[in-house]
Length: 269
Image 1: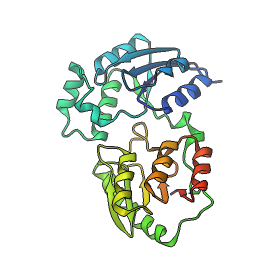
Image 2: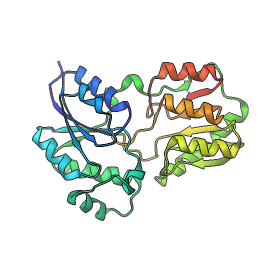
Image 3: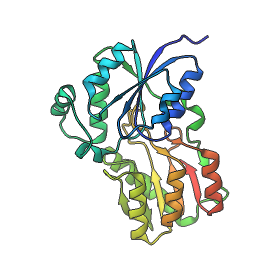
């Protein structure tokens, strides 16, 4: 019998925080959400026991609210576009102190520092994966169409490059064609990377999305879903490979259905 716990959910954008909340509460835990103005979906309040709204960057307030709610474990999930650091972010004194300690402002560095600051207050940051087992990417080809010979070569080539790019903490996605890198994900996100690479390659490109070599599996997990497939189709990309066991696939059945209808190849590697 599972022990009822007070869990915290620090929720970014998209549907994933809602799915995670639903699964956590299904296990009988009490769930407290910290949501971001202008970013987190408002209907998250229907899936949690209580919700508090903060500005992006209000780290001190977030920690105070978790203490107020007697939270001892917390999960961070959902995207917060890094471009918001130049527009919507309103860092409080605690967040500024954390940022000033950092050697640089790359994604993993910021997220790890935030997690460490939360844990310094006795609140353990845990991985969402145990609550999302049915959404984790399986290994192998998921679609009817198998990878073509050129795509296989691009995949072998691209995996090595994706690891190197990830090691630099630049991003998780690259676009490849004829064993040439056309686009590397940086601040703009996965969809824009796909569009940019596919435009340069005039379509018929391979997209590879992998966890970073030193990925903290509590933070910033690779995610693909219907929006990813729509972007692939519209841009003319023909294949997508993601890292099995470390990537979350939203709406997997519908994703595969749309891929099959458009002759795409999807796989977990």
